[in-house]
Image (cartoon, rainbow, N blue to C red; front, side, top):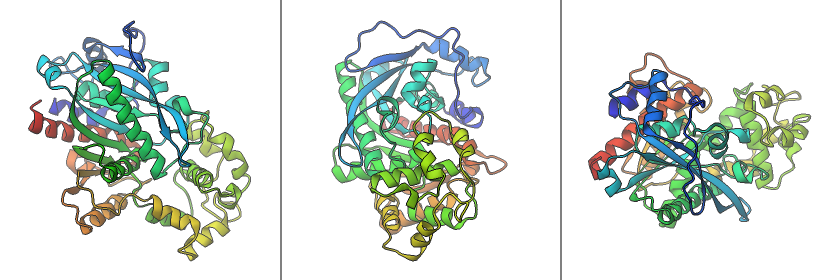
Length: 414
């Protein structure tokens, strides 16, 4: 399995959608507290991956069964929200594994804009989870948990709290708890191992989740591998707002929109018109990122820029400005984790610079963390050149699955 994961990390697309022509249909099995949305046999999965040149006949590939689970969490305002998440388990596991139980990986997804890209919606509409579930579950043998987040799936009518620490952590933790209850009710055997990971926004959410778990002491985490997240928001914001152009304007526009909502600010004091008036429609879950970018500007600020010049000026000049304080409040890099943490990041990342992960590693170690390390993806996988944020995703997932598999093998024997 180890070599398989390494090879897939090199070749798997950002979103692998298996051809849907002959997929197994969800079974009529009765489920308590959720519904089956995908049910692939190991044979079907292996044939699909072989046909795409991802594995060979000698590879071990598991089937998977995906459940959509509704649950309740709290938003930034502390109000209850009905949300949803995808729980995927491997099938066709050896009897010894069935006896020990499955290790869980909580996988927080990266930045999305269209509700059609939420984990439960992909599973329901296309008959398959996204590529990271294929790696973690069918190739890694983990039970994978993917919250849709507030603003997607069953809560599509709520604004998405983009890069807001409190609600992203609560949404993830509440899903972990919901899955534990669901598994007990449906006789799905889990062991006590819980791994955390996620990419981009999901990497940020991973560290936010770990910080809250350690503070609340309700759960125990085996290891956390946040990937390519903007952990130090203050440094990230300084870098973005001081640059003349934006690499992905939709990311920063949604950040402005979410923080205006969460901190009760008038959007036009953050985002220039005509963009401020457009944003509620642009980020309502109906559009993909490319369509949103086309309606925005790549200029950072100024008369024709995305951000209001007064907002930018206040951010740089006043350390007590509300947005400066919000960036510090929501950063997730300056604390001392007790859990083993591996920061997975590509050195060629043009959206969330590698330096953010370097700052996070250095800060945590300076605060006394004993088991935090930064792992550069390109050097670790032996790639010939640095790769971008978009190209890095599935390679980072493959590397993380390998690390988690090694820990599982060393601790519980499979």
